[in-house]
Amino acid sequence: MGPSKTPTKAEREWMSRIAELGCVACKQDGHQSPASVHHIVQGNRRLGHLFTLPLCEIHHKGDGRVVPSVHFTKRTFAARYGSELELLAGLQVQLGVYDKVIT
Image 1 (cartoon, helix red, strand yellow):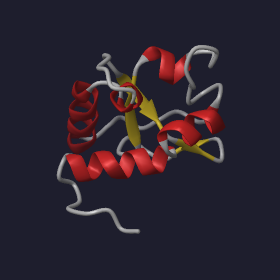
Image 2 (cartoon, helix red, strand yellow; image 1 turned 60 degrees about the vertical axis):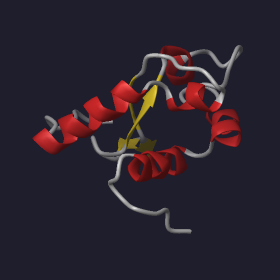
Image 3 (cartoon, helix red, strand yellow; image 1 turned 180 degrees about the vertical axis):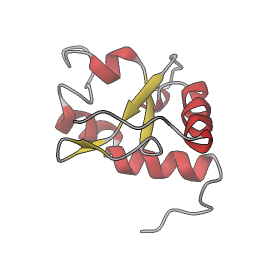
Image 4 (cartoon, helix red, strand yellow; image 1 turned 120 degrees about the horizontal axis):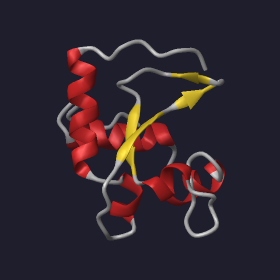
């Protein structure tokens, strides 16, 4: 991954809004945890600042022994919570970016 560009105002607003929601994976497990912003990566490249998810430290960078981690047990994470892009689509609908999920 190369250096990322400085986020635009819209990108900063998106990342702030999602971080305030708390961890998207913890929410599925029935509890609330503070979140930081995780950038979705495909082919060793970040997709951009609008392709981000709110994840707690354990779901983001944990070793995967306690709960699945997007960085260390990605397949297990996706099987339990959905793919990163599915989670992103859900957030976009929840926050009114799109009014429905296209299937």
